[in-house]
Length: 78
Image (cartoon, rainbow, N blue to C red; front, side):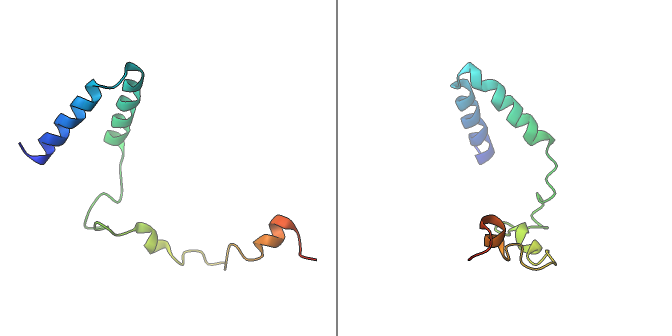
């Protein structure tokens, strides 16, 4: 039995043991997985362990977003 078959069997066994009130949540989750178009699913674009947020670092061009945040939140220091 290969790894995929083992995973499918484990999934089926777990679903069989679920209470009825949780079955619809499983169905909805599986539907969302099947319909999802994940633009980062290709290992060529983002290899395992590569964080796509790293490509965005420096993407904000108008300085520090938290500059003077204390003044904005709590008022100017006296």
